Amino acid sequence: MTSESATPVATNFLRNIIESDLAAGRLQGKRWAGQPGPASALAGAHADPARIRTRFPPEPNGYLHIGHAKSICLNFGLARDYGGICHLRFDDTNPEKEEQEYVDAIIDAVKWLGFSWTAHGTEHLYFASNYFPVMYGFAEALITAGHAYVDEQSPETMRAMRGTLTDAGQNSPWRNRPAQESLQLLREMRDGMHPDGSMALRARIDMSAPNINLRDPVLYRIRHAAHHRTGNDWCIYPMYAWAHPVEDALEGITHSICTLEFEDQRPFYDWTLNRLEELGQLARPLPHQYEFARLNMSYVVTSKRKLLQLVKEGHVNGWDDPRMPTLAGLRRRGYTPAALRLFCERTGISKSNSRIDYSLLEQALREEQDPVALRSVAILNPVKLVITNFPEDQAEPCHAPRNPHDPSAGSREFPFTRELWIERDDFVEVPPKKYFRLFPGNTVRLKYGYVVTCTGCVKDESGRITEVHAEYNPDTKSGTPGSNLVKVKGTITWVSADHAIAAEFRLYDRLFSTPFPDAGDSDFLSCLNPHSVQTVQGWLEPGSIATPDVMWQFERLGYFVADAIDSTAEKPVLNRTTTLKDTWADEG
Ligand code: ATP
Ligand code: MG
Image (cartoon, rainbow, N blue to C red; front, side):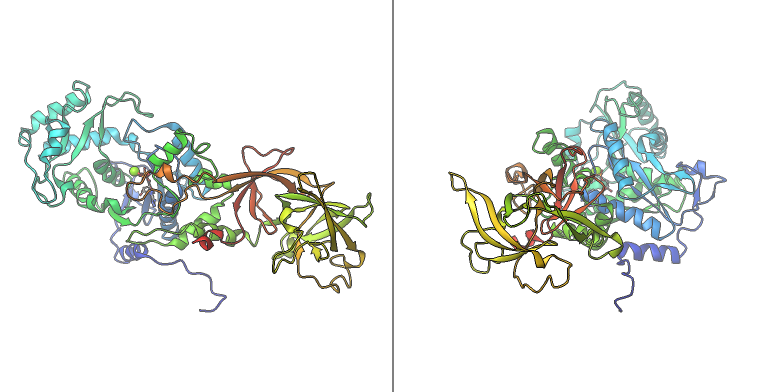
C-alpha cells in the first residue's frame, strides 16, 4: 500500500454480514409505510428507500458514555456506508428510572457526535412507549394462539420453578388454562384490577429448554407507576427481552446490533418475531440480532448505575464533570466529535471482550488536533524572570506561527518586556545532570524571543525564589539575521508579565487509581483517585481569547479548552484535555 492511499474503513464481521445480505438479496421486498407499524400498516406501502435499517436504542435512564459512542458510531456508520437509515429509538419501557432530562441529553449527545436520524425528509426519532398499544395487541394475539398465558404464581415461585443450568424447570399450574381465561386476566391486569406482582403474562415455550431464557419468559408485568411519557395510561409494562424484538420489527430494522450479554436472548428474540409473523402481525423480512463486544476501558466505569452514583453522591460535579466518561463530560473536557469517532473506528468491532487502554482515546485527540489546534503559551506555575538589561518601558513585538503545520493559519504577535513569567521549574540554583534550562551562568533561548544568560535570583525570608535575573543579547532575536549564531542547549517558554492574561487551569488525572475499577466485586468508590483534578492559577499569552469551541495547544503543556460553564472573558478557566505525550502508558 502506498502512503498516499486513503485509510480504508476497517472491515468487520458486521460489514461482511450486511454485504452478503445485500448481495444475496435477502432484504428485497422490504416495505416502509412512512412510519413504524405492524404488518397491517405495510399493506400497500412502497418499497423501503433504505437498503438497511439499524438503530441506536438507549434507555433514557442516564447520560450517554464513551461505550454508547461506540454503538452510535457503529450503527449510524453502517447505515451511512450501506445506503441505510439509522433510527434513534428511546427504549423507554421501564417507567421507574426514565426521565425527560435524559431524553434531551441523549438527543444532544448524538447530534453533537455528528450523526443525524433525518433521512429522505423524515425524522427517525422513535419512542418505544409509542408502541404500547400495538404491543398489547400482539400480547392478546399470542394468548389467542396458545403462545402465552397469565400466570398467578408469585415472582419468587416463578423464579424457583425456573430450574437451573443443570435442572429443568417445572410447569406452572396455570400454564394450560384456557386462552379465554388468560385473555380475561390480561385485560383485568391492563385495567388496573390487580396489584403489582400478583400475576404476569408469560410466553408458553418450554420449561425444560436448555436455554433458561426460553423457559416461559415473562412478557408483561404489572407496575402501577407513572411513565415519563404515557403518564398513567398503563399499569402493565412489557419486559425488555420481548419488547426489543417487537420494537425492531415495527421499525423495519434489518440488523439489530447489541452487546454480547444478549447472545443468550437471541433464540427468544427469534421466537417472538417468528410467532408474530405466523400470526400475520409482522411481515418478512424479519430483523436479525447480532452481538459485538462492548467497549471496556481501563481506569473507567461505564455502567450507568455507577455513573449515576458518582453524580448523586457528589464524587464528581455532575454528569458533565470533565473527569466523567460521559459524552457531556468528554465534551466539556475538550474531546471533539472527530476524535471520538476516530477512537471508535480504530478500536474496531470484535466478538470477544477486551479492555481498551485509555491512552488510545488521548492519542486520537492528539492526532486529530495536532494539525489544527492553535498554538499559544501558558505558564502554569509562574516565577518572574527580570531581564535586567532590557529597558523598563519597552515592548518588543515577537512573532510565532499559529500552527506550524499550517502556514495559512498565519502568525501571532506578543510583546517581549523587561519582566516575564516563566515556569518555576525552568530555573534551579544548582543544576542536576543534563539540566539545560536556567541556572546561574547558563544561557538559554526564550522561545520566539531572545537568548538570555542567567545572572542569579532573589529570595524572600523563607528562602522561596521570587525573581530570577538574566541579561539578554540584543543580537539574537528570533527570526532576525544571525540570531542563531549563539548556540544554546535549552529553550524555554515565557509570557510578558505586563501583558499576560491571568487564568485558571484545571489539570486532570484519571478518576480512578486502579486500571479495573469495576472488576469483580471490588468497591469502585474505594478506587477513586483523590488527586483527579488539580487547579492552578497561571498566565496566558495575550491574545489567547478562550472560548469553549477553540482548542489550544499550549507549548510543552498539552491541549486545552475553555470550560463551557465556568470560563468568562474576565477570568478564563481552561481545562486540560490531554498532555502532549502519553504520560499514562509510561507509568506502567
Ligand atoms: P448500562 O448497563 O450502563 O445501563 P446499557 O447498555 O443498558 O448501559 P442502554 O441505554 O441500554 O445502556 O444502551 C444503548 C445501546 O448502547 C445498547 O444497544 C447497548 O448495547 C449500547 N452500549 C451500551 N454500553 C456500551 C458499551 N460499553 N460498548 C458498546 N455499546 C454499548
Ligand atoms: Mg440497557
